[in-house]
Amino acid sequence: MTVGNPLWSDGLAALSPYVPGEQPKIDGLVKLNTNENPFGPSPQVIEAIRAVADDRLRLYPDPSSLALRECLAAYHGVRAEQVFVGNGSDEVLGFLFRALFQRGRPVVFPDITYSFYPVYCRLFDIESKIVPLDDELGVDVEALCEIDPASVAGVILPNPNAPTGRLLAIDQVERLAAHFGDCALVIDEAYVDFGGESAVGLVDSYPNLLVTQTLSKSRSLAGLRVGFAIGDSGLIEALARVKDSFNSYPVDRLASAGAIAAYADEAYFRKTRDAVVTMREQLTADLEARGFTVLPSAANFVLARHASRAGAELAAGLRERRVIVRHFDKPRIGDHLRITIGDESQNAALLAALDELQVGG
Ligand code: PMP
Image (cartoon, rainbow, N blue to C red; front, top):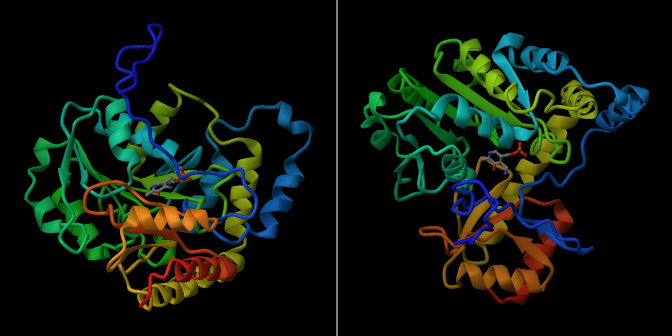
């Protein structure tokens, strides 16, 4: 445990901060470790950012990000009061843990899921109740529905889940929304565009349902830091109260302009998203041909396990060959690799490195 410093506030040394995937400073690495999009953003996004990079930067942006919220509302068929935007969906998630889950009861999430959730729990002093994934690493809806909703503060799940990539069908999401009617159900849809059906269509029927999404993955804008939540205006107001008690202007002028432009270029979005999905299916087949079992993925990454070679050893061997993938030294997935779908040459470099490591068939 970190020893800390006598000047630190209480409990800080005991936190275990989230460890993001490595962002190496070395040129020429094949970077398949943080689920970034292999394609750049739409050229219209770059143009829109350039168009606002002027004297107006001396002015604060709109604290309520109304133009961006209206754009997202129109795109998703909801009202602007049902949309909250933040500095990446990580910030939106952080705000919602404080706004919805800090209520003296545990928040429920799976054993294998986005590793930021337990970090927010410790930061905001929220207990967690872990419901393990089933044997196929799918969300165990039966086990979740056995929980008394009055005994918990809420439930959070990524869909597709991370790092498994597995999708929960929308009727199962609805079943959870109905079961947990008296507490918040948060569906973290960071990867939904790569193969899932969004739960946004359910928010008008379930005032306890909050859906989060990000522009970091399917819109190729991880560097711009924009994420959002859609739900009942009562939940959105809760998020705005936390935001306005922390930072009034999380979305800057450049980010707002770029994000709006991203939604204006639907053709580019579809083209790049479809290309990632095609390459995911190809990579899955290529990995299977080399002795891997690959979980069915609805995301822009796959979780794969080799029949005979340990995950840590393979990750290290790939790194020596300048290919970085993510390995989690954790129970149940310690022998898996999470591999982001790259472009054709990156995927080919990964396969060539695996062939050098003689993973075989
Ligand atoms: N949710 C999940 C499940 C993720 O994997 C990520 C990316 N690390 C995020 C949310 C956060 O993405 P961002 O902050 O870039 O919007």
